[in-house]
Length: 175
Figure (cartoon, rainbow, N blue to C red):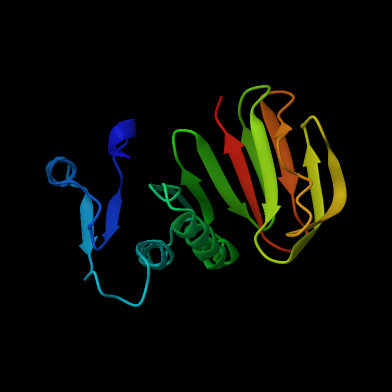
């Protein structure tokens, strides 16, 4: 968030990856910190999403969750499922890509030509519809072992994605 000049509402976790400078800057800006021990039974993202649920948040944008380690990125996406089912809109944001985790629908705003990939976060998702993309889908079934909804493109400034059953990860690459 700091590198993108965005002030978070809260920083949650063991704070092992935040620099002293950034921590000091956020404290000066009255950002709330919820610090946990490094040895714990939950990931920082699980703790963050738990706080969001308790606070009654309806939308959360997470920064630093798609970093350099694929295992952490996947774990963070999977951790989002519970919050999405709880009714919270969850978006993992990086300068290159936003990943929305959805179980109903999403109105995606972007630029014509933006790359969008849609993958199920589970064995399959059914009733998947994609409108406003180079390749449209209507009531399709997406299976994790058959990822044919990869590298699609927005045709205009917005696209619509809906799923009737299952959870989707919608990867939106910012051009």
